[in-house]
Length: 498
Ligand code: ARG
Image (cartoon, rainbow, N blue to C red; front, top):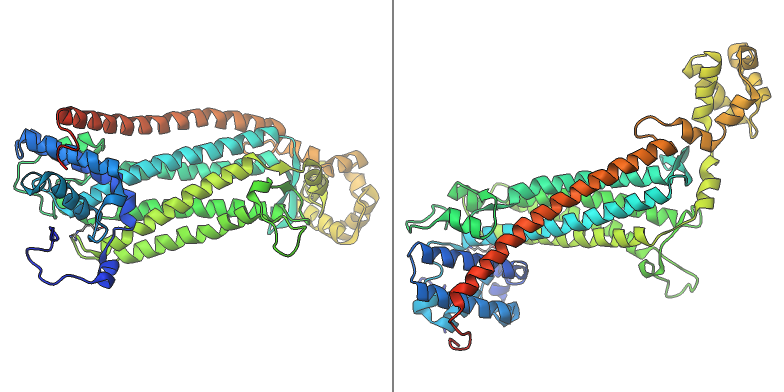
């Protein structure tokens, strides 16, 4: 049959090159399932509002069920988008007198916005579940490594002793903020633009509340012009994804450097490694490197998306078609990155001895020594900082004698005369006692970290509950919609219509 969209107004047809340039069919694979659900809801509402007859409603729904079963591959890919291709297939199946009624009171503008929001809702849920799993894995590894001592870094230079648990919980908490942001974005994604039609709504007596409810959206994007024009929800989500990807890239970078012979803190499982085509001994952390690299794809997607939306006048503009795939690319990349990170962390081998032995390299206990001088002798911290700085520059071995010699030069007094003892120095230079002393809230002390992990495990249960509740609300509505469709189509056979 001739093109159902162009046959009226337009005469000449675009060639393949033009179609390739203008069509969104390739990225519309993301919204195929959603489009059918949106068609289901809209058709049922049309029937309930007596805009179409019950038997037409049943035939349309049956046709849609068949198209759903056939899958996107069976659709005509020479159409400019999934919506018109799907409608054309439906009309092929049930005839124009029936199928041609489905698009009453609707435009592709509100249709596509609804499809994107519905699909994105499911993607956000899946991502939150995956991210929750990664946070769980980090928390478990931290619990196993409460007493795994390691050097902490600033400027990538050995700084102070800490524990692997302390380090891992830092990443877990950063990813917790990513989940919070996803949850917040979700509430603005889960709103229904359907019924806005092209932008000015419609003169048909449609029921927007009903389609909203059938599709399980929490509310409406009320203003019909805003409903079809705005893509701020895409920008917001992609910005959240960019932040997440950057957080992951920082973890990935550590996995890469911690795997080097210089660090040798960890070993990745072989499944996440590659080898060299020439150097037979090589075990390279390629998955972590790719994760680091792919964060650039997510950040770049945000830039492309935001630039596409810039300065677009209201309401719908075709530019918007170019905006959406950036978000899908960012989503796919972020989700797989989260899964890879979870896999690497859950199979990681930690070299506890190496970490511990390097925890004092580079005089990491210098801060505690300076603090000890302050507490034992009452000298100002700045003076103690100078004394220990000189010691760090000049001495391998640090005992009372060396400290007294430097203090004598700097202060004109020996610190032993002010109460400093050899035992105090010994304790200050011990990494374990360093960590034990750092017991303020959020510090690495074993007892504090134990409590911190207990608090997080409790919070994780709540997080799990909340994600499950969202998942459940979405599933219940979509299941109810399918059941309704099945009721309407009970007596209509698929092949009767073909
Ligand atoms: N493929 C289009 C998009 O993604 C669907 C909406 C088309 N609307 C239109 N007026 N041409 O934005």
